[in-house]
Image (cartoon, rainbow, N blue to C red; front, top):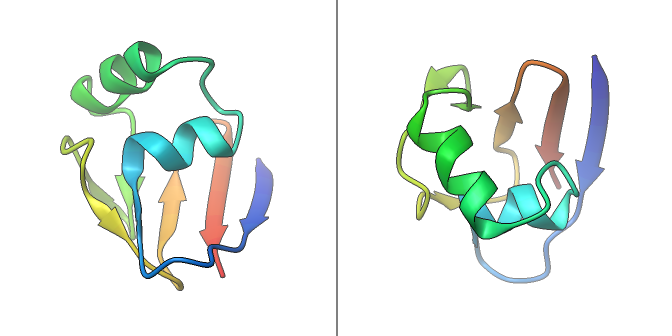
Length: 70
């Protein structure tokens, strides 16, 4: 599994924006479908809210990649 460490300079980033920033998806529509289909875990729990606010320390897991927010 590929691990990506991402630093954010704002208080939070929304889940769909994070997936685009990490180049896991190519569009907002693709992010929406992936999230709605239950293919994304946030801190080990399934998350279907694309506007979920993520902060430093959160871990987003997909089948092939893990994104760690710093």
